[in-house]
Image (cartoon, rainbow, N blue to C red; front, top):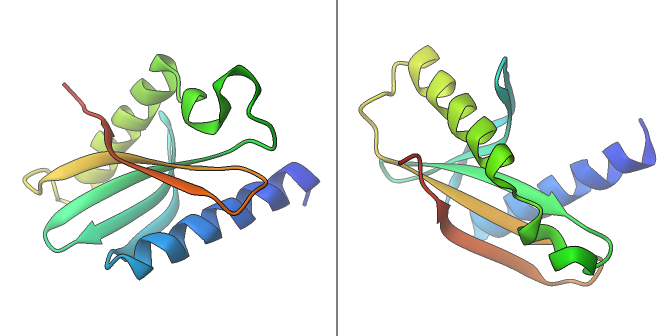
Length: 117
């Protein structure tokens, strides 16, 4: 495993623990679709939460949260639609969150960071 992959996996694990401590439950990790990958799929009651985890060691160019570009959002949305279809969950309410992490201990959880509309 590369150093970059190791840091990414550690960031996803930190994000998962943070979200679970807030009451969410992990449903799926690293769902792969032809459209892209969903880092975490969590549940908050009936609500499905698709979580994009972003890690940046430096805050240059806006930091981790700013790295979720329009193209990245579209890939996540399409992968989420694929996930919902494959699992027969198209009628479940859903939202898209971003968890941004850096080298410090700070975790920025952006609830409803973007939508499919």
